[in-house]
Length: 129
Image 1 (cartoon, rainbow, N blue to C red):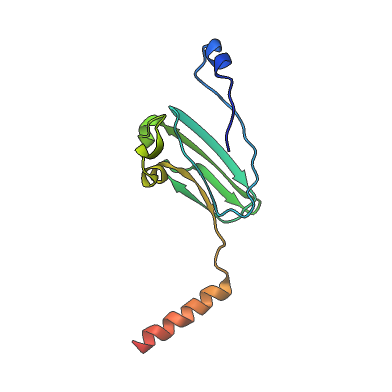
Image 2: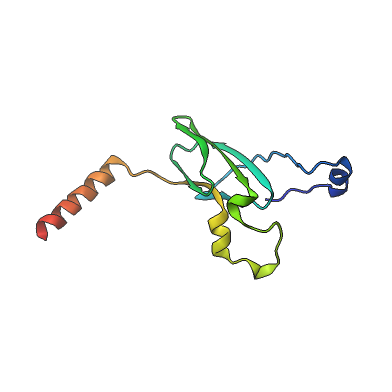
């Protein structure tokens, strides 16, 4: 996902703020992560998935999960992530980038049948020991 910006017009306006909206549809994905590389990044996301797990630093602000889906907001400033605004190639390794990202995982919760089967297996294991 990328966004094209007319930097000449932005610089001519004297503003350093570039607000924009992106609508996206996830299909076949397990997670979505955002990497903050600006001085300040604000992300709001919502979806119809009933079991998201919010990940990363900073933590999601006021996450909401209900029968209709989820909504969450994140706000990151440059001091939170410690990443430079630009780098070349392998100057920053993938683990550092991953630790600076935030977002959500879409996972399938365990159903009652699976939990009961797991409890029976552990019960047998403890009795056998």
